[in-house]
Image (cartoon, rainbow, N blue to C red; front, side, top):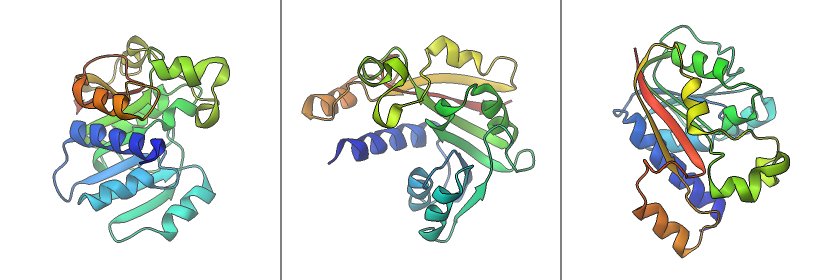
Length: 202
């Protein structure tokens, strides 16, 4: 399996476990891009809305969208939905490309009724040393990487409870050792490249 697809599987599994949705729940994917994770959640039995400012990416996602999957243009810091519109919300690495993720986090929580999961990139990881320094390389160019403490600050003053930090993608590669590490290392270990803050509303 190619490394990118394997990482996508790992990220999906972690976010899905942290959200713990029930079949048929409504879920918002913030910064959905071409709809990769949106579609994964639909296949797992949920009703998804993806939001992204990139019109071309949304057009691609819409062209492949099955029933139960819709896409809307919009920015994370100004989500075009009323308060408490969705059972759950998540974002996978999209907020790393904002100058300041906190407005996007606050908006995600505003439109959510139950649980949320915000996935970012971890500055305390091996992958940061390989791909994140000096402005980033490849798909990580322009991304901002954060520490656990910085991520907790994004939620300061917001009406949430049971905030948890979990990580995944512990090695920079995707070989046998990296996949073994993914199975054996607890997700509470704070040094995985993909770092997720999850919790419940109010």
